[in-house]
Image (cartoon, rainbow, N blue to C red; front, side):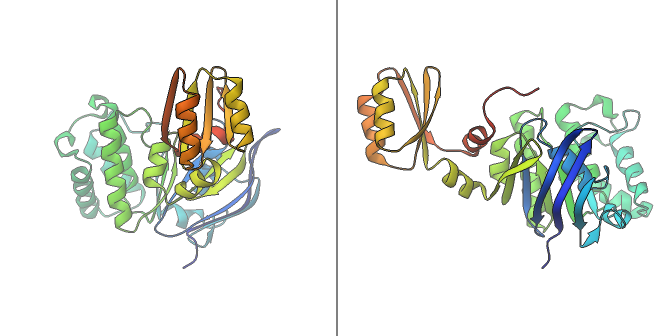
Length: 303
């Protein structure tokens, strides 16, 4: 089966600034693919080109085997987009937001109402169907935004930071709903700043920065390749520990009084550090996707 999205040497420029710099990747039917990166990495610019909102400045982009530049109307009819910002109509009720959005796809009224009712139930919004959008909490509004993106029963669902600002309960509810949709064969393109979210949902992902792709693969493979099995964080470091790590060819980062050690499951090394060098505080934990992200993109704050 051919990829549902094919991106080749995709570019996006704003004046002299290159937001997306010749990136290439494919997304297969039925998978959840993640685009990760710091603020300004080019993620949102990339997905806006994929759903036809922003024009390309170079490269080739095909969705469902169709060229985005010449067949964007056909493509848009088959995708659902959940954008970062809340674009719900505050003057309309929850149900009216779904009904009117269905009209953009020329869905017959009876079918539109049937889908709206199903989506309200799916996202636990039945009791709010007649409430105005302005009366909804952030979590309920986010659920409604995602429900609206599904009103046309899309084959491809594009989610741009879908759970930003949500409390843990709302976030996990949305994860459950997305997993349910994946089981039905839907394909997802996801951007997120939550590394746990990417690990939970994504079959494959790429991390980009400054408009370029840094790495691509499955979450587990990327953790193993770039970090290893575990992390040891040591507070109150000593020159002797640095000598020990260098002698055993163990990767680490120095963060002032804190040392972050990348250990590939070597229990002897772990035991030596635990017994000899943990004079103040040591934390032993499994490596995560967040460790990969920070190692590749840095820990400094971005504007």
